[in-house]
Length: 116
Image (tube, rainbow, N blue to C red):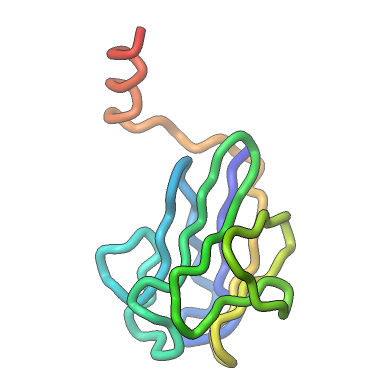
């Protein structure tokens, strides 16, 4: 099972980001996995989404706060498909199941071979 987040409000509305296994960082830095450089309500590193074993966990990295289903989170929060992630009043995401397994990259194939 794989996941994506879709931007539902803000300057990047309708953009979809497929989440890779492991850690996915979101914020205004252009080098992040989920770069939203023109979203002024977001911090440079707003939150982290960790994907593994069919689950997604969100960790708030900001000083301003990250909200899941309109409730401020503290620490780590498990997400379910359909959960919303809100940043300020103008940026919103929704977690979606894509139903597809992410394709293995050459790097992940090499790691698998080296582990065998």
